[in-house]
Length: 259
Image 1 (cartoon, rainbow, N blue to C red):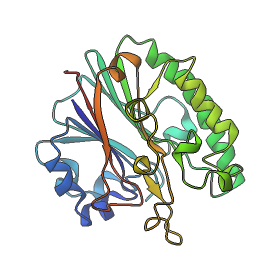
Image 2 (image 1 turned 90 degrees about the vertical axis):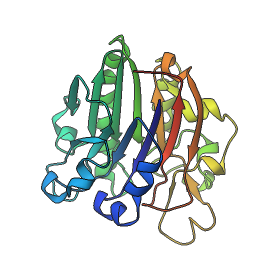
Image 3 (image 1 turned 180 degrees about the vertical axis):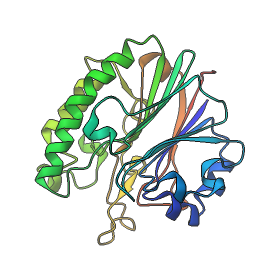
Image 4 (image 1 turned 180 degrees about the horizontal axis):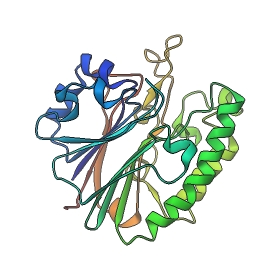
């Protein structure tokens, strides 16, 4: 089973840069996308059902903002949009496809970098989302959570960690939230499990300011987070950087798991 996660920073923009042509060549079972920044009426058929995929989406109420989706070849038993928290469900941050024994989720965590108000919203999201993750862990299904988490977990996960110790995305409280998730709660950072010592090659996002891309001054903020049973089947992963579809790079993981 191959799963791709990609923050598109606008699905229509990514389409013009060749994202769907690339996607169809990857032979993935699921492609999870974030920051769709559109409503259904804005999408042409090739964006909704590319090739033999069907797209399932959770759009934000606000036009041109946020939004998530999952492309799948096999129809799910159930589609869940939102995780039951009104503030964030209005922002289109959660799409889940449910199969027998498996949930595939595309999620887009808030960024707190624009203002203190948005950082407080990010903390509210983290507090509300943790019980939902506990519920998923108790569901009896294997689960993979794909998306832009907007948090770099450790010093290996961003180039300029010393300069970002007080900045959103690398705050102690945010990093502790992930440590708790990957420790006592038993979820697994799949890419880091596969490549425990990798640094620059693992980055998935680069600021548009300065020469961040050219100098690989990046952050690893896009993840595939899985239940322990599913994570144990992960065979390899990669970050695709040969083409740029947005300010993020797609993250691919292959699992020895069949649905």
